[in-house]
Image 1 (cartoon, helix red, strand yellow):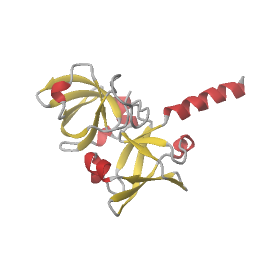
Image 2: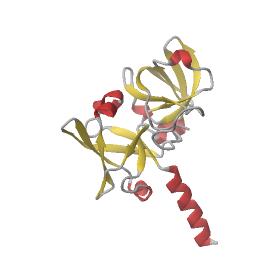
Image 3: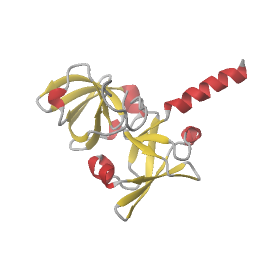
Length: 199
């Protein structure tokens, strides 16, 4: 479980193709605090630490992960958002983020507005039903509030300077592919409501 409050960014040291998917090696500032089996959200995708060597942390990417997420597009020196699993002793910010990416989406536009940035992202139409005005969604692991829902499943967000600089959002451009995870509560409500109407 994560909060969508990115701790820092890391850099991809290497991505190796293997028979079952890929091996992702990331330079992580808090690598020394990680142990084998720990969970780290990399661009919003929950990955398990398989090896730590110095500042480099290695993860296995399954074929399913490569199919559903945008992690297959990472290459040497790509920046990525990082967040460790939520501890039980701290304050809870952001929203409930599982680290189970639903799909990828596309950045449509970015525009500086004063000190902030306005970003528009088009999500797959199938996931539009899980989004509400002023609701939460995770974009590359960043918990964001939907400022406006536009036609054709385009979502508008206002990004503060803090988030813009501390995440990979400042590297985005139109056409950038991002990972999305919709609010899991919306999916639970849909399933529960559907089972009642069918029963």
